[in-house]
Length: 139
Length: 172
Image 1 (tube, rainbow over the protein chains, first blue to last red):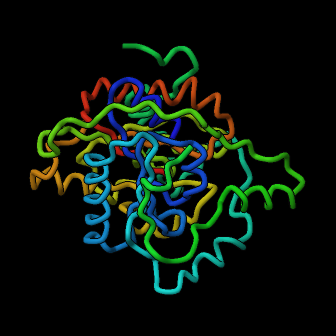
Image 2 (cartoon, helix red, strand yellow):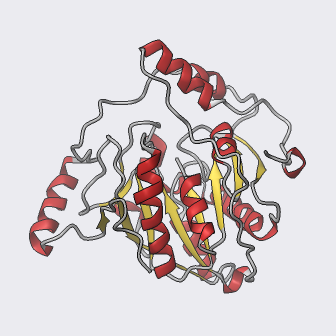
């Protein structure tokens, strides 16, 4: 994500990266970042807690306006739980990665049918962009 | 390198070191090490000069989010992206990913894709507005060349075309 932020920023548009993996964000070194020390898959908050999600977004927007040193990673003040027990699991958990193929991996089988129907109706994959090196750069 | 004085870490335990964890896991499986991108050079920087209530905000998220009716992502270096109209309802969003537990994100996409929160803030006037489309992709792309040469320029083109004043980027 940091590579994309750098590309956008280089074109004159300010960016703010969220992160829940501080070491990765430190390595990629994006222009501005906020770090939320939550388990992966919760970069902008907890499920079913729109008020927390809102506060986190407001803090990120604030960081966008206040960070003036390139490469700053601002640590957000929220913790997932009191004792950070989730980190023990995160350090030790097994490989979640499934076998990798070029087949689209639909959440529901009905999504596959809906995508097929859309393709037949519209004659193209609406809202799907497949960039190739060298062809995308326009403007 | 990073300036430690520019961070304000809350008290608590150390962050999980996902780079080390991935290295140990790959070593154990006999895989070649994953080559993380390390940028030692200072990042480009464009000052944010607008007031938030006047700013049009773009949203880019990895995390494998797509819309019902769109082609889902595949799990092998998928460098494509999807356009998600800013008025999309949460229950039209779908999620597929190989590298994180998608359980909570499928219940509430707001944990990795804060479109609804940004929409609330735009309605209240905290921000000026949103790009007509958010952009989503898969992440977990092994080829940093593919990201650098294809995906990143295409997303930047898209954000320029949307005339946004700033972009929020959310990995999963």
